[in-house]
Length: 162
Image (cartoon, rainbow, N blue to C red; front, side, top):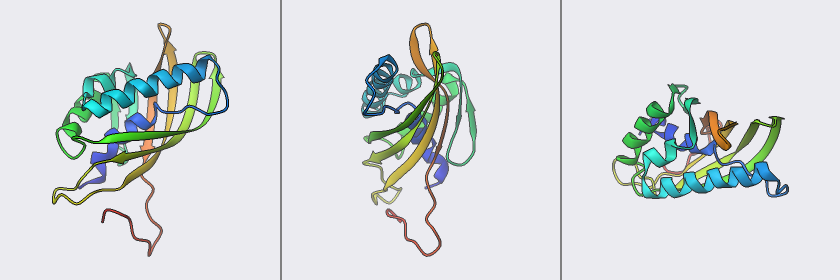
């Protein structure tokens, strides 16, 4: 399995940044985005996952590929939900968030996908980090940009799922 196929996973990670401490409007709006994303992911609904992105969103996947626009992001998820992400679930752990302006929020965190398998059927452990820029459009908080990555093991370390 190529690392590139992990890109859709990372895409959602950007959406899931809610800190447990603050319960203001931004945190509540982030939770709505996370809930929408998680529900769509669990159904394998690429259109639903892509709906949390702006029309012109930019997503940098774990291999450094750049996807531009909701439609391209949706196509990427369609391919992956038909492949190794079929039947998977995602868990998002929120990290820090910084309000740049009332309509712009930067969030970071971690994600974990369960149920993925390589082509031979061997379970894959998919864990990574993300950084999202959230923007308010038409009263909704959406993902404007996302960068995700899967940390590489240090020399001599063994990755689970390999």
